[in-house]
Length: 119
Image (cartoon, rainbow, N blue to C red; front, side, top):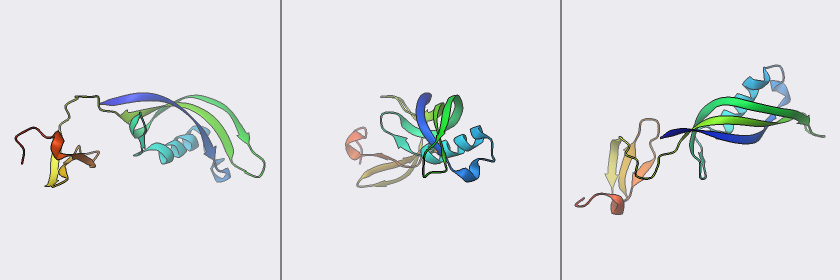
């Protein structure tokens, strides 16, 4: 259900964050960018687990921010095919059944995916 995914991204740190520790600034920027977002073929990103490698930082002309290539691991919600999850029914409509997993509320089970007989 939850997996650690290794990812690589270039993180932009604005100049007003230079007084902070680099790892703290990078963690904040990565969480702003990825937390609560669905990444295609990865899953729902939950939070940063750790930073495994920092490459050199660069400042480009006309931009006072530093740009650092970061290797990191992220906690991701990625249910497997046929995995059984326990949730609470939030409501029913002609569109299907709305289910909550407490940390994620936007699950819709369409009528054709429900066990028969279902009304």
